[in-house]
Length: 228
Image (cartoon, rainbow, N blue to C red; front, side):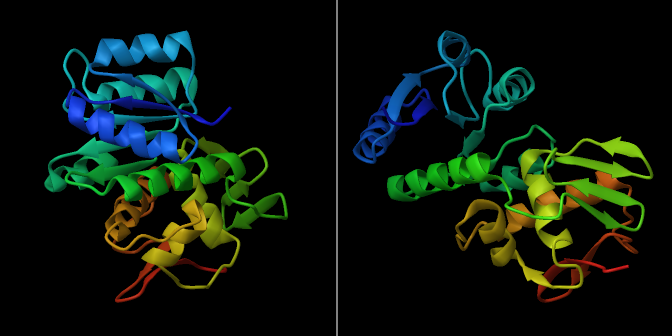
């Protein structure tokens, strides 16, 4: 049996095309056309990942993502027709693992689904248990981050970005390298998702973006964490 993907969109043609491509790649596909239908599908049997259109009847994709993350820890890829919504969506702390903008290539959607599942399955493969950066403690086995002893709640992607950089303090990562390190693939055009996740990460760590203590910007290149 293949991995179970839930495709939720009120556009029947999109559902048909995505289902066909995913099934060809060996996925088991279930579908829903609105928010309540998506809730029922997940309650009936938790999928391995959900593809959610944002503008859904009944319950929109943003609220569904919040609910599925909170209640099931379900990996979610959001689908949006408005590219100017991307930063806002990523910045809402709703826990989405990725986003896809319409119009899209079905093959790329399949690749993104595989990338997110690889990240969820393997997470960031790091050794050393607990890493320390100043007053930050990053426990890669428990996926726990503490600042000065206080727990910091991060999304899966935020944790993976921080842990990847913390494993090599001082090393500068390009956005594409960070995408590759947390997903196993680097897709050009998705680099600004890293910027949005880093923005969230800094805020949760209490890091001043103008004079950050933890995640530093290397202008024209990418990001790093300091060794100190």
